[in-house]
Image (cartoon, rainbow, N blue to C red; front, side, top):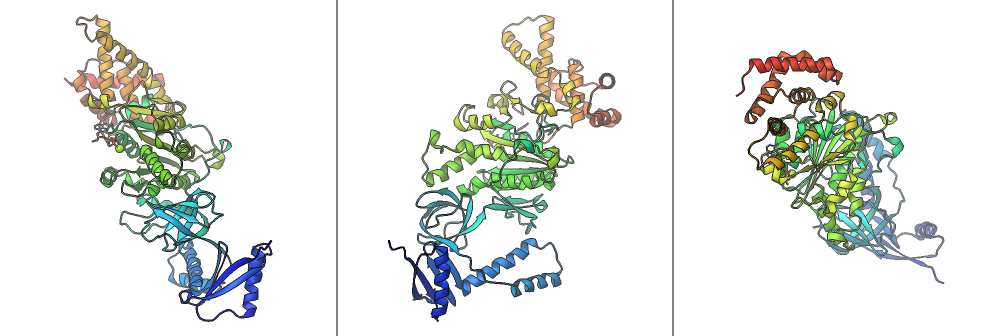
Amino acid sequence: MDNTMNATLRYAVTAPNPQQLEGIKKLLSDKFEGAPIDIQCIQDPEVGGGFIVTCGNFEYDWSDKGRAKQLRAELNTIKTGLGTTDTGRIISMIRDKVENFELSVKDREVGTVSWVGDGIANVEGIDHAFYGEIIEFEDGTRGMAQDIREDHVGCILLGSDKGIREGSRAVRTYKEAGVPVGEGFIGRVVDALGTPIDGLGEIKESGYRAVEERSPGILERQSVNEPMETGILSIDTMFPIGRGQRELIIGDRQTGKTSIALDTIINQKGKGVICIYVAIGQKASTVSKIIQTLKKNDALKYTTVVCATAADTAPLQYIAPYAGTAMAEYFMYQGKDVLIVYDDLSKHAVAYRALSLLLERPPGREAYPGDVFYLHSRLLERSSKLSSDLGGGSITALPIIETQAGDVAAYIPTNVISITDGQIFLESDLFFAGIRPAVNVGLSVSRVGSAAQTKAMKKATGSIRVDLAQYREMAVFTQFSSDLDETTRKQLNHGDILMELLKQPLEHPLAMHEMVIILVAVGAGRMDDTPVRKIQEYKEKLITYFNTEHLDICKEITKGGDLPETLRRQILEAVDKFNSEIEVQ
Ligand code: ATP
Ligand code: MG
């Protein structure tokens, strides 16, 4: 059988001499397992100087252009590893690179675009590309190999597809898709690829991490043991979240999902937690409002906003949460605590569906591709609490899912519910009834967080969840009866007050000691004589009173994190004093 390989050599001016030709033949022959090589030489002025040899899917670029490109790549490595502003040193580094520059004889696998559109390009000819590899197109646009088929590779484009045509060249880079990471990203707004979009100049990166990173294994983790305080009374009392936990925020549109995530970020001020807010598929105006809120509350200083708006292509929306997680991992592996919000994963799933359909993957339930569960499980598995050996850092994830008409049993909601460690279910009915945050106490749960709740909170919370459940049941039974006995009336009144207390205005997170004081007071019935409509005012005044008059008590709760009986009595004495002094009617 004739296994001769046909190669093409393009040159601009001078054809290679026979000796050079022999050398090239030998090189190609070694590459293709000793097959005889037949070289055809073609003159092509486009080459510039030198030659370009193509054989099969491989290309050796010894042209002037190729040399310049290799040198440019070398010089780029200086830029990333710089860390100095000394010009003399920079010049000497550049000179060093240029002088020691050696043209490598590395071959590159090259293919051609067979179809392009909607942010997707199919490339034929690059047979060895791996999943997630960066593919570079003729015009400099980069893509990521996402769908590897027998006859072509489907790439999602990480830039505009305007400069790419059918027949355009595409080259393997042998590099995994990644994003720059580092401290420089804190306080900045970036796109899904880590490029700043806030007009505050370049970001100095400290490293580069693959967007698709392996999640920590069981032995590399420990169970959650530190609280991630949201500052929202109804959540921290009944559904406490621990650092390293994944708690889903789920609800219909406009039920306050984003607000809960933002309040949680705002509450991390001074707690040493780095926050990352990933906006996926939202309107740019909404994201801009969110950034304003963070700025106003001084929370942008410790937050990175990763933004892929509805106007961005599906591939960018698809990559954004992974990129945000890569940035979070950089800090987690340094032993720091990170809070990451994915707002929202419903839109993420929709973006993934769009690009999967374009990649011609078979649609399954609700037209989502078969691996849509894996899409979110491999993302959320990366949030964890690392073992002490690895520094004990953590990523706490607050993914958000939007439901349609409260249907938590739809495909994507059930998937994400089963992946996370609990969910906070927000309900439109409650929201419109003025109960905000609209947390549905019956359907919400936090499966691991109570292990991380401070003792003080645990003791102060007591049986509030059960009390509320009983109250709701009783309220239903008694809604039509007019004359109630004294005990029932009191119980109903107490429930009304509890419900009122759990209402919380936006951007007003409560500190742990404030929650403890409120809970102790209401638990001992010290608020039962206050009219329900005055409860919010009473709460505010009580907190101010403690923060100014009883700093010792506040400090003891915060420092000790416990609530011994003596301290509880001290709190109640102070509350009684407050009640006798102040008149809220
Ligand atoms: P979307 O589905 O559009 O993303 P969402 O569920 O994220 O909405 P938010 O944007 O957080 O909801 O909130 C919707 C509206 O409700 C906002 O105008 C917000 O100001 C208001 N809101 C949310 N929480 C509260 C609260 N605790 N008190 C008062 N208003 C609130
Ligand atoms: Mg929202």
